[in-house]
Length: 78
Picture 1 (tube, one colour):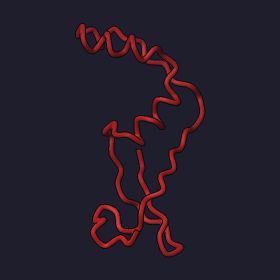
Picture 2 (picture 1 turned 135 degrees about the horizontal axis):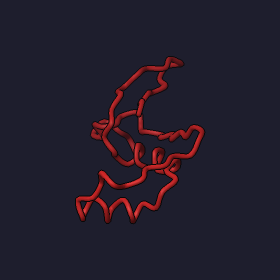
Picture 3 (picture 1 turned 90 degrees about the vertical axis):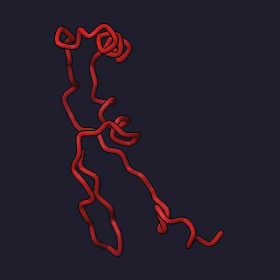
């Protein structure tokens, strides 16, 4: 995934990663064309090499609105 931030009318690249955090997972799973429970079963049974990953064609996007003081909320005023 690619995470960016829009601040002061500028777009900044924050990170490029492959972890499956909250917003990344929500975005990627929208493109999954397989039964997620079956994926979890394959992970548990250690048969992931036999799992048939199929993905929908297209794109997905996740938009997060973050407090300007994130991650240090001590400066935030109510």
